[in-house]
Length: 249
Image (cartoon, rainbow, N blue to C red; front, top):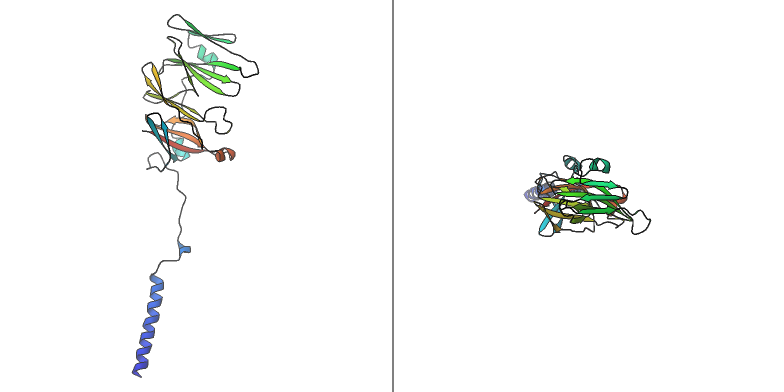
């Protein structure tokens, strides 16, 4: 009789141990919810960098931000004027004479840009964009047969700097960026130029070209940080925009 009682006690203890082990073990994986989607960060979050872009002796760290963060910063107001008539009305040193733009220089010389409207590779149109005080340069929009560009002309001597797009100048006026996005057609460069401003001198720091994505609608946040629209081939095909922050090192 005693043996039977002992046997029953051992058996009950064994069953209890098995059930307790099941309850204290790892929970069922089907009951665990994991969110593997990394949210796009705000400007102040510690970012997860998606790319590093080298521009001469400067480096840009690239990370995603959300649309709300991007839209906190106003679109850059170009000091150039989209209306040539308005731009010309603000200066006496530049005149439109038919197909020509005439620049009267401080050294007494003259520079002329002449439109060519022939429907071939020589096609070019020049449109005065206005004077950039921070750069001490006249700006000129240029349209070619299958591409676009921009010129910065020195009003003292006529020296000309050819850039990919109109300059976007940093708040401290020490740098400017010329972003160009053409990841699909490839008629224009896809990347950006970074220039350094030193009084009346302008130095090209670097001109990295991008292959997997493009950036556009660039806005300065501060003297070292920018935000921009980011698109890959797939984004463009789906009419989708994302946003990135670029921090200059």
